[in-house]
Length: 244
Ligand SMILES: C[S@@+](CC[C@H](N)C(=O)[O-])C[C@H]1O[C@@H](n2cnc3c(N)ncnc32)[C@H](O)[C@@H]1O
Image 1 (cartoon, protein in one colour):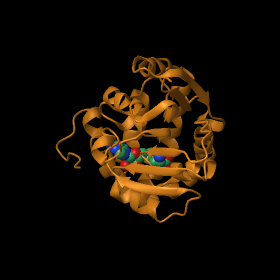
Image 2: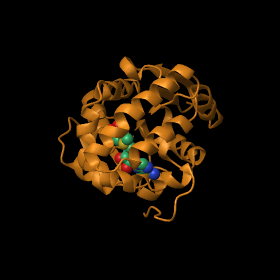
Image 3: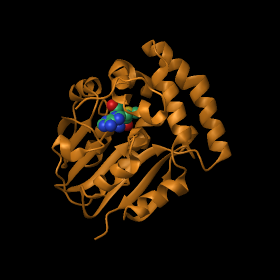
Image 4: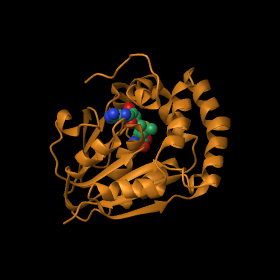
């Protein structure tokens, strides 16, 4: 697996280098997310919204990063077997150092093509927290993710989406320009990943569009559930289910 280091013109080009940016930012990731009130609680909410019933569930955490979303899954489903995948070796290095309430296996691979990383499904639930926005081919990825779910199983995309609301866009612009980008620059010495974050959130599908995209790929019972605090109207759980 390799991520391009060629000159970057468009946001789509930049998405291909995002894991390299996370390699550089990994050391400060937990510190920065720890300053974000509600971050861990909201990951727990998205994990709970998977509503996995089976005691011996097989779960997938895609774009697991330093393992904060993996922790949320493990705490919610302690008897599950969890595969956790990320393309950044740096982020995975920190994830592997944590202790989890469930059985977790970490995998270095590209979420755009989970089969190439050795994931052959089928899963009782998939959590993808702050992942889908970063994939250059959103539709191709959704098609492959659908096929990783057991019939009737849920996937939750825990993701920013502000395009449908002027108010949400304005709050996001304010928070990202005055807090996230300056703190990221101070903590890591490089603001480019946080500039990318701001821009990629602005560019990401609105709620209506993302829900339509999910339905177009065959997902059923698509719904969007809110967070609280400053993330209300900005971060969401997009819940979808593979048909029975
Ligand atoms: C904002 S972090 C989220 C980490 C974790 N899910 C959390 O909630 O804290 C985004 C993660 O997505 C990973 N990522 C970005 N593009 C990826 C890709 N194509 N395949 C796998 N992981 C990717 C990055 O390396 C990074 O660790």
